[in-house]
Length: 285
Length: 285
Image (cartoon, rainbow over all chains, first blue to last red; front, side, top):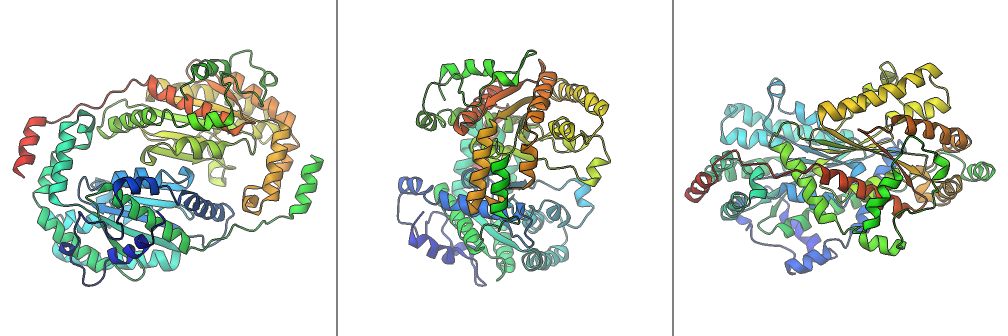
């Protein structure tokens, strides 16, 4: 992934105040002129660096350093957009001891008794971990808006509540949050759903309800555009990642994770013991 | 890992009633005549199969199949034995969505108020997951025995309690439990501790208390021998894995995991919808 243009592409994919989802072509691959095969060869290029950065983060948590950061990757997208594939292919390169994956389904009865952020708060990764949300609190302004599961004024309130909560995570609890919408076209979703129906080893991934949601495609796109525009802040950006090419989306998310870990500028924790003294004890043992 | 002799070696490494720890040479590599380089090349040979088996397990859990199995790998060993390395190198090949890692430290004040199995029960992986315990309830008959943190009659009681609890997990909750002791020599531990002291990027892994425990090496070996012999049952075996060569221990644990997943004989879940009907709905959408 040592492609200078990929880093530049991240700026292009960042959601700003004038964001229009229709401007993003799900087939495109901004910043990358190579082929799928090139990308496959390059995908593991930064693994050693990623590994060392993750180890430093983990080490600082283990050493009990105060204010150790927590990295949180939020993944959103329509059914079949490739969230699970990102988790598998990007996170698989990282020491599983420090990875925490939370997957959000429809809220349970118990969860519905609380504010929408209650169950999200409980699923936050520990300090020093790299957490992934496969779907998230954004469902509460996406499906809940489209399906009118909550009244308009409650949906309205939630945008502000999300921004406030995320900013507090950053400023008070040292979170680094990266939010990615994996953006596919309706045609691509159709092809992917068909594959799930045609392959018996993929039937378990299919749910008849997926076609009901697909029928509300335009409403979902509108809900995404509003959610991304209103909750992409200086503290916590959204990235809208073209995802018709799975390999491109995975490359971008991996690059975002790498940049986030680099930005922490972590050192190895200092020893809280006298190294020479311990060497002498070891020699005598 | 397509080496016929490795499968045979698993039988050899399984702990039976006449187990003597002194009979196991930590430098040995039963069932494998190849070199470290051969092993590195072969290590990923079964990844596609491992991946498919894990996906089937995960799919059955997602599909809500009753009695979906849970796989639990218990890792024990002296400090520096390579437990963390096994987690990294073996589990990293598996979809992180279905991996659950629990690491056990000294019990907290809250945990000490309960029976020793209370915190272990709470850390059990979900049905369909592949869980790893990095240390476990066996600490309660290892360090607790050596350090006399509990009276002899309580230690004595725990062997039986462990056997009973594990057998219930297998017979009533469909767990498949694989227990591995990573067995290193005292000399090898000395070399690994020295490396942690010599490399500033490894200082965080060192704790002066490690040398105190090292001073009780023989007592620990005795406690391991007793624990493994008394708790290796027909339902839940122990494997004593020579671990002075890290690559050999990782190869064995990966093979054990593979054999365990194969033994589940899982199929892909059946569709609970009419496939042709859904294809027609999709075409119309």
